Image (tube, rainbow over all chains, first blue to last red; front, side):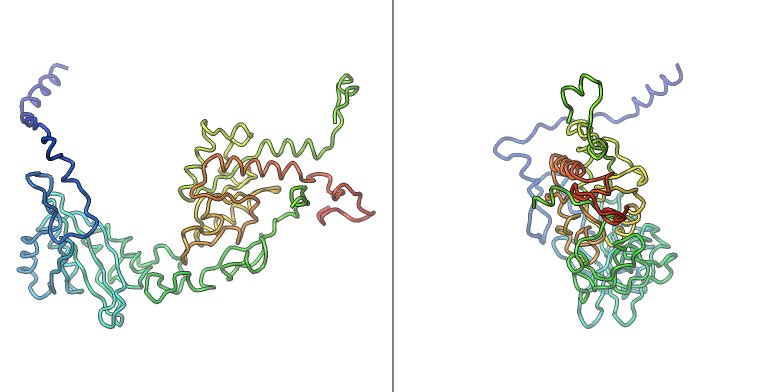
Length: 250
Length: 176
């Protein structure tokens, strides 16, 4: 007990002094003003005044410069929208870029991987990678473009294991295969589904007959009509229901 | 049904159906098929504030063999539909089904390729509840509707159809 107490005392002594209390702002400039939410995307970070908590996490020019120095022509461009910087990377180098960012720029966390269908002739699909560095308080977004003729992207599961399921989702929704992925199966849709639902040409209500409904009787066949209740009447009960007085009244 | 004389004798006369339906309707055991946010309202329905125990339905059974009322609460995807139908087939007859909320009834706001547009496409639904999500009172009302339905059924006396005796050799409703 004594030793534990002594350790506690030393630990307290090592702690830094409390931060000096800062009184709230005057009534004329209420402090909650700086937390206004802007509905339209802004090109520059919101004016924070002297609030140290407001600083841009999505702009990292030094890191982007380091990327350009290291990879040169593999960095195809940097675009900025709504105060967020996005780096367009050559498709085959994405794993190298991620490894560089993880090991040398301390981006330990892969927040998200996803894809989109731009529906253009050339480089139709796009895969994005959102990375976060907790140490630097920065976020960075990488993008690669994929052409319809060669739907493959090198996997980043060797760098970030968290990308496993996200890459499967991209494959499920858009049909982009990830080279070197340990388990390239569909994520959400059934294994034998033949389409990629997030492609722009896929109809919103699906393709009739592509997803079977369960049988309407215990021994019945699968149903390939998506609206059997509308076409064949109500689903029968497994036992014949006696007529009720409620039904008679109606 | 109970005459004054019979009460003094210590017995009463009634129909088997009436007794059985009374017992069945007041001891419904729901199978909570909670698929989305409607399931939160379903929990409130079972909890002490709305208290489904007043209607004898507090015993949620997560095993289909012990349940006789399926509450489909939430949107049904094509993938999940097969599991739901399987659970429904495992439930013993007689059984009833409530489609809770807009999504289970019609697909609701999920008008897209992955969601079944109403679970009545593969389940015989007895009561539909509107709402997104419906309040627990609405679910209680649906439960009372199911009870009303059960009390008006001919459950045991299958030889009688609407009170008439069937001819010799013929069985009521084709199930005997």
